[in-house]
Picture (spheres, one colour):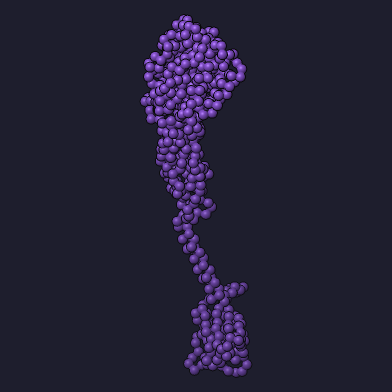
Length: 520
């Protein structure tokens, strides 16, 4: 129970404040954003944007009509100023107006909206002989709020100028005890399905009975006007709180909702040239609350890539998505080998910026919005790709390998297959038969001496000696042409070797050819 002075700052009750704080993250917002010129919307505009007229509430008004209410014009002031509270309600709200003295009496039960009719249902004057049974009045209020189909937002307004003074036979003979504990339990049961708040307005300094409402309804504000003339203002404030609590019920849907970011280029952004364009989408997940993002900045790390093109401030309607084209600047590491290839990497998207709402200041300090201040990133991994390396490297390497292979082959051929010169004299190793003369030319010779017969082949082999390079002959020979009897030997210039029973003499510089008729 809260006691509030004229300098009070309107505050929500314990349970209502929690719900409204979370709930103000949602509501259909079409006209309650920042006004032209950067001005914030008013509370009235916010309430209209929330369409509070479409959300019903239950309100029970308990008016003391005991004899003391005739003093100081208190009752007439109540009749005149009660309209301030009723005017803040909507036609979809439900109003139950009770008067109470010795017992509670229903004066009007039905829809709000016709303030004059509701006020006219009050008796013209209080009952001079009436007592003040606040317990019976609160019992009637809880019974009305416990009916089937009651709204999820409810309030009890108690206007009294005295203390609890019940008639004989009342169920609430004193201001405490079991009957009051039972009323409190019933009120607690109601709060399981409705947001219940109480407003007690003591109309005189001795109206201690108003405090009893706080024993029954925990979320009760006891307003203390300095005089009966302040009643209208306090009733208007109670009506504003009723509207705020109704807003809380509507806005509870969007607790813990905010702004989310999604990278659109899922196929991999191409950074081959060092820069590229991509798309980043910001999406509001609220259903009712307009959101703003200030100081928005984005970057990619691992590899490090700068992102430009985002506005410094973004405003989002509830559920709205906005896509921005951004420019990326950076390169992917190419690795140690500069050959032509495509590099792939997953960078991490980082966003900074503060999420807020144009509704925060108009609702402060009474309502603190529990908005997630950071932008939530849907997918932090951003695929990147880039073509790196030289396009001519691999062909150049291939050409170099070919040149090396050709050079190696030429070197091998120069050593192992030099050009043959001179003649090879072939004769039986034993006997006096004249030798066949085989002229050496090219890089490979075929042996088939007509006189001595047999088959073979001969190639050269360059060697380095102290006298300089020389070419030896490598001779394969078989006397009958079979590979089984083939043998091999090496013959130096001017030397003689025996291969397969044949003598081979290598004459490297034979001089002029012999005259006709000489043995070959």
